[in-house]
Image (cartoon, rainbow, N blue to C red; front, side, top):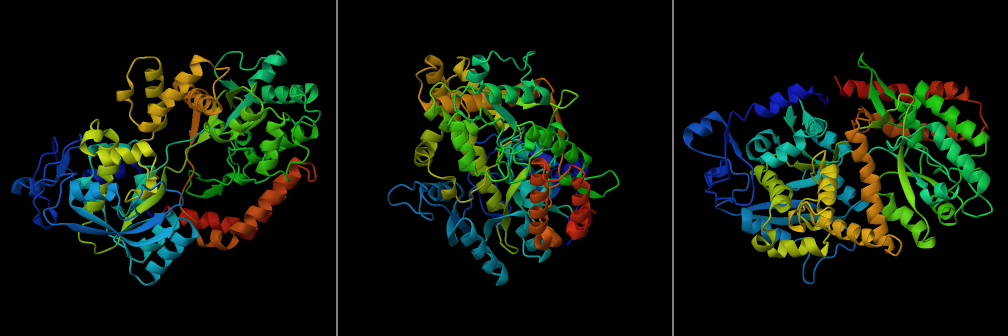
Length: 580
């Protein structure tokens, strides 16, 4: 099996081939599958698409058209603990499935139930081995490749083109091919991916109360970016003057896992050099390389080694656990933390709980050109697949329309589907929905942020907020604004993750400060499966030794040679082959 990478224009052409005519609105009509009469679908702004022959015959495709005869959909269901199921409800009998039956006349049953993780993966493997797949299930990239290779999946191209609502198509289009393209094989849509809006960049969270205490000024121009020199200066001042009065200050502490993570990792520093650890890229000549083996990575390691030598990096770097680093933060030993926009919600909140005076400000680390280098995240997460031979594959597309268009965009869900609205308000886990995927536009993070800001400023009302979560955020931020000094930790964390964390991303976007790069997300190759763990261990051990000074920086060149000879070069070749 060869995965065909299509250009953006090629993707657009493939998706528009079957969409010659567009029907405005969502009125009733005749469902193409089996000629079933459909009921009119309300509550969506989507337009249905038809092919020329269907236009001539008077048939139309309704994105939310109900079947005249009940259609059964057997689901391979992943479950979670503490899903907040209401009394009497189960993963098969619940308000979500009742809504599907009422709206679409589709009866959702469970082919199997298994706890997400190893148990679920085992059930999927058993189903594949016996070639007895459920009608629909959710899989990762590697399983998708295997299912396609063994011709076990239904081609969803026609179902998507004809039945996906305009809203859903707009979401996928917002990724400019990076999402839906990953599910295309030989020009055919073989799965429908969940989406991952970009979470970049890795941010530097600095104790603002310590900056104020020491009269330190960073980001003098107010563009929310700091240089590596400013970062080093702040770390030096915090170590020498110990504003947390800990008696044992630490400049910067990093997790020992050398995966380039943005959470307590070295990712932000790497990115400022244009280095992207354990991510794959394609050269103009078609060859593939690892971001861990580039000259830019060597520069970043040299910088980190210099910081370590100056006493500005944790002297126990390479051995600290997450719990250890959290303790350094809560004990007032370190005031510089690295993480994505939402770490106030689950990490910095711990510091605030221990020290009511703690305040943080987030910054981006810029390169020598004043740009913030950021890799696009994997736009596709998991994949919704339909077994080959299932008679109504468009039913899966309709489910996605129902839950990720109508449920999200409807302003009358409280009256149209009160039981569903109650589930949403109660925080019932998303796994209870028939298909546990999230499908959001590439700009959804900033879109929600702008709505929150507009509502806090009184420009729109709570009723105009797009999601329940964003409504809740408005309340947290308003309570924080009323009295920042006495607000509770939850409101404090929600304020800072949104107004500081996402606010930073918004500022950088408006300033055109980002310099985006596009890694490859192609799944795991055969050699990566067999040699990947050893290569990761080689990388981790070498990088830690270089940073701590146990090895000289030139040891990086030897690492690259060993990495290539021990399977890295073969992995690059296998990935390049996937792109042919």
